[in-house]
Length: 444
Ligand SMILES: [Zn+2]
Image 1: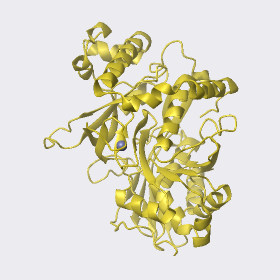
Image 2: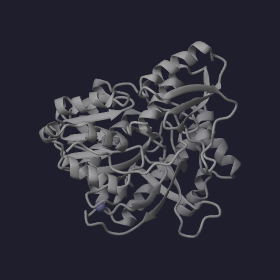
Image 3: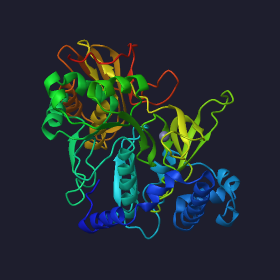
């Protein structure tokens, strides 16, 4: 992801100071007001995509649809959905809107669950909106003020590290050893910590009692992986501040986040979210989450299939927000690894480690799957590409050797097909043995 330029930062600051009013008001809109706003956006987005993006034009023509046919929600709900594979296959030529210059767009790159690289582009205007929605998300947890420090543990840095000194952010890459992250936490003393939940468990366990006492955390926001409410409550108790889950994706950006009451509110002003029934499932069972991003006109995501399951619910929340709620969220489930010593390596960390391989040796690795067969045996299955060599296999072994403890055998196997999960899903991180999930044993 490139960094924001000064004029974009200025726009962000202006938007924040004078605008941003819409994002502050929207959570209190009535259901009718919100839906009217969403439908208006969707009409513009669909017409734009049809006129300027070859993929959407063909996709909709095949379904016998033209933009004037979109009169109401029923028409929209009949539009064909878009899958991740379609986005990857058509990117960039057939997926970017005419008139947008790829060099000027912000590109968010991720490994995608199919093991392929998935690029999502948006312009700085959308970026401003996403950033504001991010600020609002943290304000759901505590009174986030411009002088508060944030420690951000993720794959890649955010496109800016402060707004002219306001909302300062300290970035730490996910692959940093836990001791290093704990040290950064003690040094920076942030009010806000943003990280993976499994990482948080390790960090908490690693922190000596005196270091924990010196922290001034006011809120922790976790994302990307599933965590249970019980785990979050345990960590909140240990750290003395709320630990709230956020649900987002590279494709749709902000989807939902927990308020202080524990409800997951959809960000209705960022995405229009629907759920589609899973074939053969019981009535009332969680459906597949499908989202339409209402701000990305450079590379629109319209009825995009987000491969997670959930149920939508309308109704009031004690926090006062009227955005619908997401319940029974399932998905984002990758296995963490458990080493013989009892140490847990988070699935987020493992994803980043495998993602590093994919990006470093792009032509060498067609697909991969990291499998922990037994506590002391980890196998990286690789479907070799044209650039594959024994030397690369050796480099991968050396790199992964740094992540596991002595006694753990790490092997690179060349395969024709990667292992699937029990349910037949492609999952890049698989642990083959069960483990009882319990809160990390923290130091007293
Ligand atoms: Zn709420």
